[in-house]
Amino acid sequence: MKNEKGVTMIALVVTIMLMIIIAGVSLNLAMLSDNSIVKKIKDETDTQQRMVNEENKKTSNVIKRYEKEWGIS
Image (cartoon, rainbow, N blue to C red; front, side):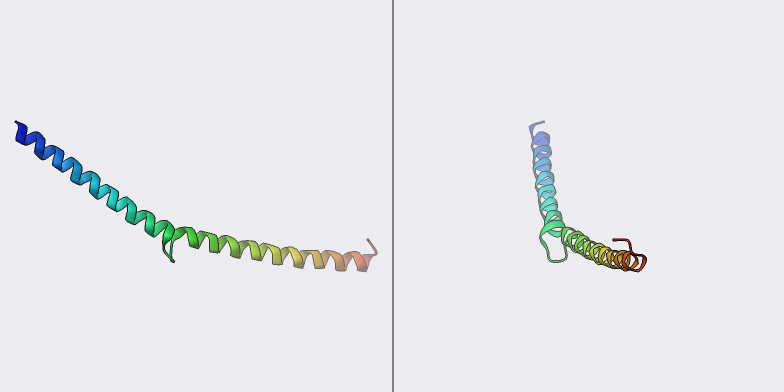
């Protein structure tokens, strides 16, 4: 009876160790590598912000042009 509990405990410890290793590898891939998901999201956010800023400048220029053309200051 004791041997069965020992095997079960060893299996539990091995399973927990494997889960810790898999979690560490997953976190490394998701957050720390050069090609990580977090880095990709940050890059895309920066790109979108740059595009919004460019569009705002274009819109502002159009509005200024029409205000000048129509005499609305």
